[in-house]
Length: 102
Image (cartoon, rainbow, N blue to C red; front, side, top):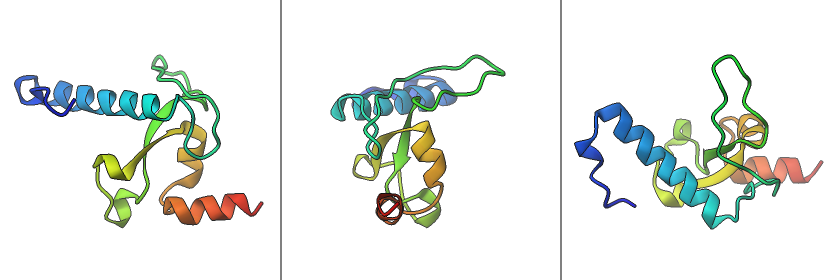
């Protein structure tokens, strides 16, 4: 996947395609389940003006970018939109412990 010549595509399209292929690969690796709540996830594209469904797959940073995280595979998991939004910028382990205690 990283061998695709993204640099030959218009810059924005290359980044979108690279992001989509990473998200798809993460979902495949996790059997289309959220890393946190295990709900089934899917890649959806809501129409303009529609809200995104909670089961929409998102690439989630284990160590948030705001805490020095990056886009490397080792720092990404597929998560449902609900878990990703609820977690925000809290590091994944810290958030998971907090949610599990409820």
